[in-house]
Image (cartoon, rainbow, N blue to C red; front, side, top):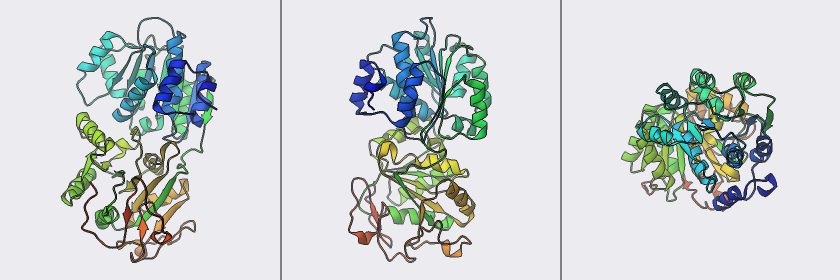
Amino acid sequence: MTFEDLKLLPQILSALKTKGYLKPTPIQEKSIPPILDGMDICGSAQTGTGKTAAFALPMLQLLHIGRASQRKGIKSLILAPTRELAQQISDNFKDYGKGLNLKHCVIYGGVSQHGQTNTLKAGVDIVIATPGRLLDLMNQGFVHLNAIEFFVLDEVDRMLDMGFINDIKKIIAKLPAKKQTLFFSATMPPEIKKLSDTLLKNPVIVQTAPVSTAAVTVQQYVYHVKTDRKRDLLAYLLGKENKPHVLVFTRTKRGADKLAKGLTADGITAEAIHGNKSQNARQRALNRFKDRTISMLIATDVASRGLDITEISHVINFDLPEEAETYIHRIGRTGRAGAAGVAISFCAPDERGQLRDINKLTKNIEIISDQPYDASAASEEPRKQNGQSKGRKGGGSKRNFSGNSGGSGRKPSGNQGSWRGGRTNDRSYR
């Protein structure tokens, strides 16, 4: 199937061609026709599979052809959990909507509201917002939702994880009863299903992959290592000549700052982003990562969704997440849109419980033991999980950054780096 087969407007098809989109992803193929027919949607798909376009393209088309009423006011509202995701959605609407003469505004906290309120006063068709700032502007009288005809909840599970449920309910209470509601979530636990049942009217259920599964394009590896040797292991893996594009996750904001500072002191250029950073600081770091001024970004789970960065070669879980499903979202930053990716996790002895939970969701994580900081010998966990343990303890063998055996004769390509046993003084990873 092609985008032409979905009967999209020529202006939208032109915009998609400019972006290099040749054919719809499964979530787009299954969602766009019923949305164009006016149906509510309850969509579930792995992160990185094109959910934004799945609702943005038909919404833009319906607004343009005048199916939405011509009453003045905001006609479409999209709620997202994080500033990064809201900005990403805004960027996509700008790209997809070229030539359609529709105006949109992105609203989130952490920055002055002045620019946002000025845009709202000038009149917009679409608002993309995080719940907190939206409620604030509603209370100040800058936002009125009585004309809404399209309502989108994106990454619903993340919004509930972040404690936005009460804010969402307050916003929903201000929406008109008659509207088209589009509900998208990467996972669909019972509490999410309950919320969808209260919002959606005879929805079309769209699920393009098993809930809470990792993309098959992502190779997954785990290293058993003591907590105080994780930074040594990270430097060990990164200390070679090639320059992969790496996103590193830590559990805490303090941990992200500490790791970035330590790596920088070692000559490895890295920056941290998390909720305590100002929006401008976060955006600068993201831009430096996107344009490859820096090759490593260290983040808390604020960045596990909403980062639209192409060609992230590796995701490294410096700390395992508390929730197994968060692991799926983290590693979904690589291996996007069918590309290959690598996910590497560090498991300290006190994180074995989290690893067990993660293995219940994804059963193809390979244990790597050919490194000098192996802590698995002291583990009560069996060395083989799912029959996939490989490698020899001691670091004598050579393995490249994509996880392939160094003896295979294959060389890393593109942005993939390599590692070997032993430390190195090479610090060209910048």
